Amino acid sequence: MKLRFFAGVSVLVMTAGLSACSSSSDTADSGSGSGGSTTIDVWLMRDSVSAQFQNEFVKGFESAHPDIKVKVQIQEWDGIGEKVTAALASNDAPNVIETGNTQVAQFAQSGGLLDLSDKVDDLGGKTWLKGLAEPGAYDGKQYGIPYYAANRVVIYRTDLFKQAGIDASAIKTRDQWIAATKKLNSVGTQGIYLPGQSWYALAGFVWDEGGDLATQSGGKWKGALDTPEAIAGMRFYEQLQALGKGPKDSDEANPPQADVMAKGKVAQVISTPGGANVVVQDNPALKGKLGFFPIPGKTAATPGAVFTGGSDLVIPTASTKQGAAYTFVKELTGDAWQKKLALAMSYVPNRTSLASAVASDPGAAAMAVGAAEGHATPNTPGWAAVEAKNPIKDYMTAVLTGGDIAKKAATASDAITEAMNSGS
Image (cartoon, rainbow, N blue to C red):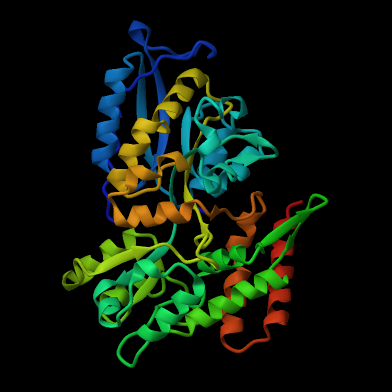
């Protein structure tokens, strides 16, 4: 699933001269234009980057590589899965596509994506974030090239923490987090606003315990919420959720948790850092009063596990200009542009070796710490069926409203098993 981290960012659809020189190992591209140039079609997703960054990249790329022109088309997230599937099966596929990191397996299964396994070292893959790299691979081959990442952190009210005598920088463990949250949870203030169905947050706690959402054996997938490790993760979620007034039967979007925090009575939320901008937009009085820290882990040695959302770049096998397409991918995911992208959009760069690039951005820096413990949902096309029905949300609500955790976990695991194997 691709997380939509930013709202209200206008991204222009532009056609511009970009370019690249094909590497010596590239095959000749067909469809060259006049003067020996080649034009490739690139699909990028709305709100992934700002118009300013895209324009800067266009100009820089054109200046450095005058041999290839790129026609950029901005796509909408709604319905993109069906659109990409149709394009990959056609004779008129784009040459480069941005896709949500957890969507790659779905597209690779059909044979529609170019295997880029032999390019991993050339692209700096040894230090890729595993939460982007792992879902970009399918059946032992690398199809998706990590583009950018973002993950959840704790957004907190610096003034409320100060009033309570709490140093947020000292919160490194779950126990310390619970103690601080209990201290913040008072008649007038919620220690944390945590809706009952924030299942990505739950996933992090499950991973911390050594559990998973589902496991694979003998070519079949099985729901794993009923394991002792996963149940321990849910128990911690239950403990944390009780230190606020979050609804037990809805997620962070209903109502939008940034809107709730903007009312001034919430000390913490779990969100991507971009949520802080929405809070301040709704309540300018909170400007300068929001801070960030990584989700704490079980011990101080390791931050809490997080779901790594973001995008990968893929090249369709139907592309007749794979050499030029590869050069485009290499440029956009290389060190220079990754650093610029991270600063422009408060993203986490695609590799751990570039984490220092966001040190000056408090929200992105907190994300980068968590990203080192980034995970993805099960890497299989069948996971889409789970998210469509989402028995995890029903399970969480059932437990938080007094249901027997073992029985409800078993029911949810059975539902996950059925959904993941329904197409096999």
